[in-house]
Image (cartoon, rainbow, N blue to C red):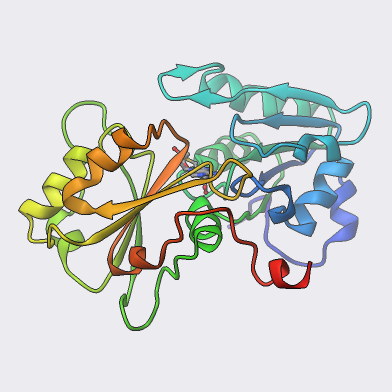
Length: 268
Ligand SMILES: C[S@@+](CC[C@H](N)C(=O)[O-])C[C@H]1O[C@@H](n2cnc3c(N)ncnc32)[C@H](O)[C@@H]1O
């Protein structure tokens, strides 16, 4: 099969290839979590098309004179529809520009990166994917939660709490089995229903939870409780997002405190 998708391979020369769209994960917020590859591509791009959840200062790394376009989405407030974003990327690349499509976290984790790749490849536009640190691993690290601590969890599952109406469409019985960690993205408004469905399906109501808001940023807040009290934890702590919910025994390790940066904190 012929396509134009580049996989991680020898790098520097391709960064300058015009007419390519680089779909790049910017990590969960802290600019220090940008990968070197992301930084190189950002410094080199002619056009930067970015989302809302890009950490402070990251756009400062763009090349002076680059065209910077915001297409961010907040819940129920899609500033630029997805098909227009797709068309914009393709037009700029077909005009010979190096385009970076900069997304929060990782582009392939609840990031619609797959749809953008399909659209671009179908039009013959070369694409490279640059992975980023997803919110789950970034927030867990900065909140002190070992997602698969071997004494507590044999698996971790990332789920989306997003639901148009009713409950998110998920395998509740599978999720309610013990000794695993669940990380809920986009789950603040449905948290009460997610907690209730898990308990109905057999998860212990006392299972620890942690809610991480603005994870990895100076404004990070971590609130803890149990799955039975999940909705109240969110309400009582005024969590409005962006936030992640960690459900499972490992959430008992959460430090409801300042962001941690290990092992740098000790060295600084
Ligand atoms: C559309 S998803 C994008 C996820 C992204 N592609 C990733 O890999 O992290 C947006 C959701 O990610 C989570 N999220 C992103 N950044 C976050 C942060 N800094 N702190 C907490 N949650 C975050 C929130 O649940 C938010 O609603």
